[in-house]
Length: 255
Length: 204
Image (cartoon, rainbow over all chains, first blue to last red; front, top):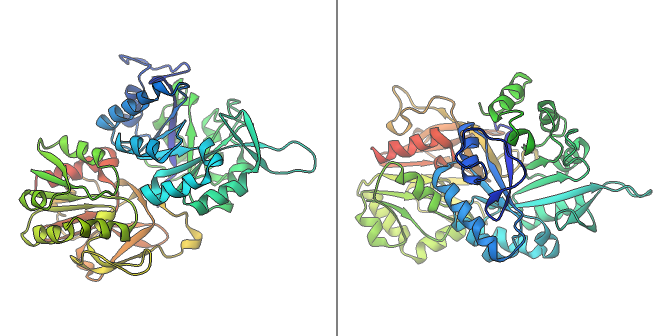
């Protein structure tokens, strides 16, 4: 049986991990490659690097990070953030990245999703969707935001998910902006709606505060994978502990 | 020398890195001469079947691969490299494959009920008798491997099946026929158990 995946995600800026990551016994706790190695040893199922480098000139550093990671870590690596063109995707894949995650550029240029999946295969094209619950009266559902959650688009998130599936996306990385950073749990309703409306895998993101939250989103939210950042980085839980918990609760995980 | 065949279908660097852990001379090449002069060959690849066959033919690699296999060179196929060995695929109509093995490549059954692609970690079950094949030495029964694919192989001769995996149905996730071995999953992405398969292949 296919197992549910547990995926740590690192924010990387100018080739360095940002936001306090508390790892002991590392030579350089700011080096994404070293942290990826730790998660590899703990048998994380995949790893995601989100590049939040602002300047175009420094974006080359991410290629170097991807290259160095692929030298030593033999598990799937996804890189997202700032990808604008087929060339950007090709460069990342050639550096050893397995999948790329496209967010803002997909909204601005949906053809990019189609061209990229035709050229490189759906399996390596992840579309990231930042979704925020609509609060105006008379409107239900969730709206897609771009530019790191700063810009509303007016696009319905579920419709957008269906559209990118049709364009050839192989997977959706779905972040609830309402829950992100709260540590109050994932948006179960959002995740479940996506999972039931689409036939490609859904990675749930945003809101993980404890292990029960992961169980909820994988079981009740029907997510195929759960992404978490701070609970792993601050060593509140190790990946192994997380999987052991899920296993005792009857969730199929690789352990 | 081990040659990893480059036919423009995906990044081969991570495949090469995995082999280099166990063997110093690993090259990525699209030359027929390199394929024919190697001790061992590896056919990786991701993407569409039809496009892959077109690229192999364009570079005259289809013929070179078959020739190397006929000469008895150890061959390892990974993911699309497994599927291409078969007679034909229903991906994108009916496309002819290398025809090294009889059988076809088809969609998963129960597609409506399953998430496609089959993406993530799933178990392999050794279906051979006795001590088990050398390529799976040290790989515990029921090990998890990393899969990403939307089509499966259906060998005509069931005896070539080495291991199986369950996803809505039971499908062949590994085959072995004399010097030819191929897997649907990615050993190079499957952490220590996957790397063990690569080590076993290098040591054959």
